[in-house]
Length: 220
Length: 246
Image (cartoon, rainbow over all chains, first blue to last red):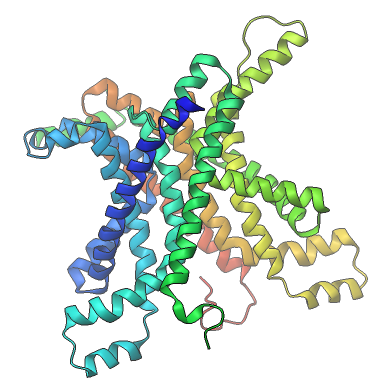
């Protein structure tokens, strides 16, 4: 168990970096999708490809495939892309952004037209309107669905173990193949993952309550 | 351009091409996914039944099943079945006087592991589908004197299918993508074959891009099939806005 917990920081790191970078990218993609045609088509293609292919293949393409291309090896990014750590983060981020952008798109569509009109009538510029009215409303709307995506990202970090990262699942695999005590290790690692996902869903529920003061019990 | 031509020859059906292996591996991916989906369907039906109509212990068990299996990574479940399965089999084998090591093959492990995970999602999909069936229809069937089995076959099953199909389609897409994880057991399905090809030809990029295309084709095709099936299950329904037929 102690050995397994040693993998926890890396799991948390992979999950938190890719989830937060993913949210930023997802928001940008959702806005692009709502905008002019070339951008919208690009986002549609991006989402189609990334959601239609398995995450493991995406990780492999980035980790094993990109290194074969000469211009990637000679680019400034190579010091990052040669490390499994950054490859895993890049793949996880790109993947979650595709799913996330669809969730945020749903949130954007749920913003009442009246709120946008009111902002415009008050003389807000487009960036101000987005920052003050549209995005807060859209993100609040999208949060419950986004928590599912975050939980599946925590689970998805386990795939990083296949490209040699020693996070929770990687360590679990090492212990199992050494001791052949699959059930015990599985129960311990499973309990850690369950705790993580449970804590995350509680945290999101709390954030939801905080973002929706008008829905709290006791308010008129 | 010679680079691209070389890659295409590599992926084609010529004497140096990997086309045949890739096709065979695609068939294997489909086979193991379908097997896992059937297992998941069985678990899902059982779980939904336990949650809806079971006694307290069955309900609790189903609750634990869906909570745990949806909260831990599938990769861990595959490891459990892979290593744990051979552990159990070896113990059983020795108990019956066998010797040495008994193992499960990759197909069985993958089918059971991915099936068990997808069953947890399928449970919720089927449960929601059943809850969406109007009570009056069940009462009407009972009033018409239908037996339990006839009612299940004629009323409940088609109605649950109609409400659950979109969710079932999602579970299938998930199973298809999760089947890549079965490659860790050594089963030569599409992911494994692509990885082998990439490792042994120095043209990794072409193989992975080809993998993208093949998986995209699989997911797109299954999307088409499920939408058609959905349209069929909605036949005879009034087309109301917001409840669109395919």
